[in-house]
Image (cartoon, rainbow over all chains, first blue to last red; front, side, top):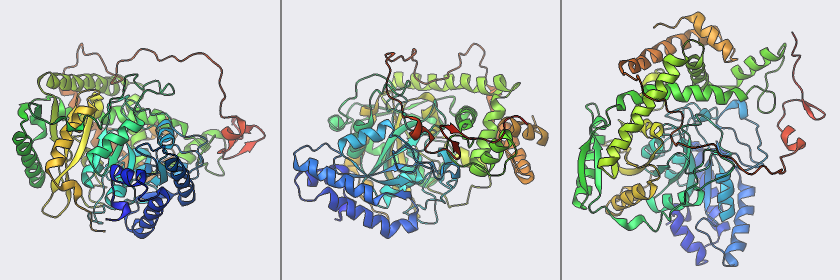
Length: 485
Length: 95
């Protein structure tokens, strides 16, 4: 097995035992990026010099006997995370040359542990998309089939795991942007409860929905990486001050007697037959492991996509007002006056998906429509949250598909934004409710494309979905399959 | 409710976005489709339902009122598209 094939915990053992150095692991990863990223396009910026300096520092730390779980591990970051001295584009032309003056909290926490950052990963522009086709830096290709999308918006983060070009990565999830690409690339992706991980230093898309989370090769790594970045941060007023459990220690809890709910609105007609088969097999497996499965109802599910696209675009239109060409980023030349400079800068700097969402959000917040659209959506959000709380009075965890279909072809849904938006129907409700969800590999379609399974937990129930996922992973081999690159 | 091209132009002005004629046409059609879809929310009676603006109920988060270092003038101006001394330089404001 090559070094770049190892999980965090496998590489950690080798580093701690001094069987391999961080410099060797980092070089192996950089060579792998060099060899295959031309096909995948998962990286926007690779940072080889800085990575090797960090790897040398990690090796000195290991030699001194100070080895945290992430010390010396090569990781990649979605290009939405602010990184001091390393350009951070958010997949947009408007930030093409932006070099941040500080690190965000999640990045600082990784660096404190001695993780080695090998580069910044491709994404949908400002995290807006379900297929990674809206990036200014070109689409990411799915390592399982280069004609297919890897999902979005953390498509680069998921594809890098599948392509073995990072040991682990961080992404963000606003409407499914960690879980859906994890599903499409056959890796593990965890969206924590809103407030579990600091958003300080993460470029904002829809602030009441965005959350940082790990994408990894297996569930143990997801537990490790979540534990490394979770926790209260005084710099983020929405981060919650509640203790972070030892997620790894809780993994082996098992599912005997666990009540798993199957929301009937998620097992609809029209679900792809391969996805349906994978769900049936997973349900049977959990039954055989002693879990108790029962149908539950989340009656407002069908309203989630409409609610999301009003709330997310409204928040986005507000958040993206800061890109005006004054203090940072692209500025249009030859504008006559300030207003023209704003309008031209934004016209040149943003791509079509971002413009469309700014327009929708501005409309929903504009005079005369605010109550009819924005406030109405906030009320429906309350109903969707109540659905989840009611369900969690009956069961411990919910099991659902991640996406209605396996990965689709690049270009297939570009002309019809509504169809694209509907592909997130099974992930969006979790963001509106603010709770946590995980995507784990659960099989492959007849065409050999990955299928993921979603486990949804109570607020701050990450330990519970991780142990439920771990029980599945121990009995299956899906996470061990390698993309044909 | 059908959204018109002139409404889309108005929204673009509010959003400080210069859109081409073809973009205006495309967005008029697409926004019309999306807004027709979100109309489905009107099928729900939300009378008396409290709007949720944040998933986690929280009181104000205060931190100690203590002075601390900020990033400094040079770092703040390092990404400026155009600067003059310690200022961001912009085109004429008064037209």
